[in-house]
Image (cartoon, rainbow, N blue to C red; front, side):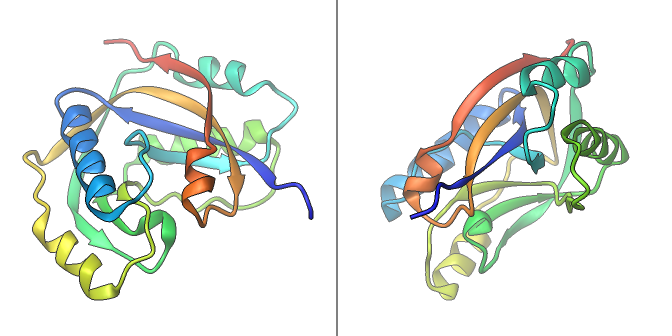
Length: 177
């Protein structure tokens, strides 16, 4: 058996009241569908650990930064485990710049496709159930503020509850407010 491949994911964490709202949905769906619990987040970049410590990268790229405000597009579902049901955000040039800076800091040549979304559940489900869930969830706001970032060690690929529950937060960086 081979050891899992570990990547460092950099997350944006929603500010209140969105944090509370998304956390309640994640908990409700996890209980209802026997799915893993996780912290609501938007992955800005995930890739190999580079020569620079992830904690230093996090501080260098996020300390003193203004919070991000992202526009909600809609709630969607997909066949992908890590995007079972999710909130899709509009693209944002500041987010794309930070994703590129994180890729450079990791020293990776691999292209990372930034797709700004916040997952609400990770679970293999029937397409009709996912679609019904996505159609039933309404966000009470058009814009979400993200006021902190985290560096998280993750085993990839992420395909099971155990994979999600194995995530390990390395560091957190609050933004300027």
